Length: 618
Image: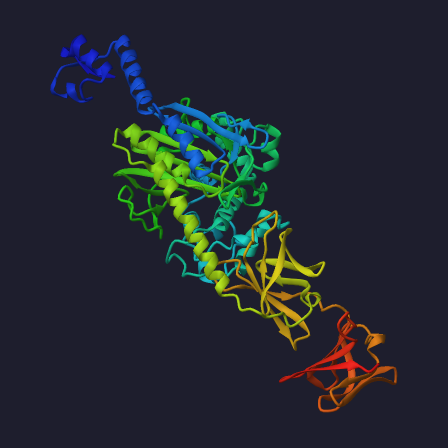
């Protein structure tokens, strides 16, 4: 480190006390090596400046947590090559009043993606992969719905979200029972919603595919690659690859969500299957090491973990996103190789957030300023991490800070208003009164889609339940043949509308589910036959009266025979335990309705233009 010779003790004192600008000595021309004591003095001054910049932050954070309903928070800030703030706030477990510490483990969600890109970068340094050649060269079996895209797609395309596929996240959400390789194999059955390389469409599945490519070329699992190339060298001992591993390490934050302005527990979500896209669990203390290494251009304790040029390339803006902003502090956002990239107040910024049920994470770098911030919260979808990152950046950059934390609280309140308005709009789209065409039992069955797999509709008492990827969701009738997913312990598919199609109005043959909002509803077709038909019920024989018309059901050659003048006459062919069609007359269905407290047993005839009822003759 150099300092002008004629600066003397006066300039040193001024620098230490911050009374002159850092470039005050630039007009002096002679330089000499700085004495050790002077170097120590400047380090102390720099440290004091950072401490002063962050003074009072704790009170701001705690007030914002109260206003934004965030139970717990862990923060690490790196500046000048060292950790300058490492702290936990609030509770990792509200019910048991267990505090968050710098060692508390949170899921990173999609903030895992930079780790996958980093590992692929190290493999590129070893010439085992090339970001810009088709992945089929190393993974010949790889296919996409769009054959041309499947032939030409590269790792760069996968990592910058320009494959043409939308999210299709429901394929993996929950416990699908698939292996990672099987999940990648499903990609050829998922319909794209854009032309290949035409625009940004965020895709977790593409990162799973990229992680799988890393596994194939290295002969190691993605988990082993990350462990050997990142966690072990950095000493990240409280970082794991699954909920089970995190819980084995202990001190794990519990997930919470904000429901009607009340903090309630959310279920843990294990995303081990898609770990390359969002499966890491870590602590603020461990992330401080990750940030320091990245800001040191890939160097840690004298060891170069990744080529400096490769690391720079990972944070180069490539695909323009559709994240429009009227925020004057930000520029247009791009996506690089595993990082969002934009500018904050004119400074280059690389960052990645992560959202998992009941958790929000954000890892941010200002590489040219050597500033890094990671924020972990056990509240789902909260804007607090972004607001806190901006607050810290403003303080360290010496900018007159906007009240980002207060702004986040106002935005949250506005979002609640929008949410209520949307709920009202959805309610108005419901057509009432209406009833399903069939008894609920006739919708039950196994339905399947080549890309999404099996979806089960089962009876649950007098209602229906959807089971998809082992997530149980109660169904309530909405209108006509549409059912709505109601509230349950696992809210993954809450308010999703399922619409059934019927065959000859005797049973459901398919169900359309809008699992992917940017695409047409996913159609699942019945994979099993309807419930086996049985004989016409014994109580359904006899005489009935339809006004002045006498209706009879008798036996002819051991078969049920209907005579209903003006409606139909012929053999009753049962399709369900209480319903039949007339042989040779498909449009006519006859249902037997047992006695109720208000009326006797009856027959109901469904024709193309009428419904007729005949009550049993006493």
